[in-house]
Length: 301
Image (tube, rainbow, N blue to C red; front, side):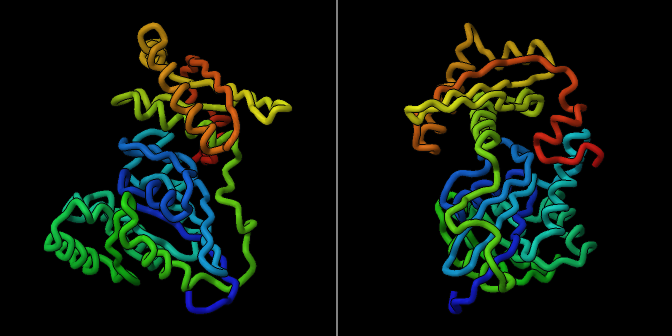
């Protein structure tokens, strides 16, 4: 930043599923606030991450990947993504370089940007995995599809090019007071953040359909005088056979998930955490308005 004016604005990260939005958000913030998993469509909430650069505060909206919605939950996630983009001062479209071309989802997003008459910065991600000629060809194809403000080549995983992107993002944020305290990383309440951590570890352990048929809620949070906390969470699935898969043989899988999530929470919160997980079947949780409110999504989308 060349000036010392106080700036603050909302920045939407949009892109096709698995383009690397959550990894980039965590890299920009310098801490983990969004679920990161190799599976697509893992982000359900509009997680806000807050990053400071000099006197500028960038408030990031990590939207769910925009894709062709099939189910009610999908429709709510896509509606949340476009809502996040519509409210933002700057938009960053993340494109997966390993696709070597503009895929159908990204093309649909570009059409959406045109329809909403929005400009955007383009960040081509995972450039460390693609040859230079392929990157230049993809950049030319993107520029032909939409006149982007800038196109950056980045690797959210290694951090290459990310600070150049960040410098451009904050340079044109509106002047004005900061929305959040300078040391605040996210507006996600700690109970929700803890549930997201457990959900990520479930995603890592499970395969195919089961992850999308589950949700995690923090039911109880008990603080103790020694600074430790007892956290009780419920993993909701829609069928009995899914409950058996989540539990694993003799409870082995849920034990691994609990240990991994507990270790991460201890590191994240810098305190002792005792995590307890329970698995319950709730057949219609994906049709329950209350669950959508928990996730910050609009049931009527």
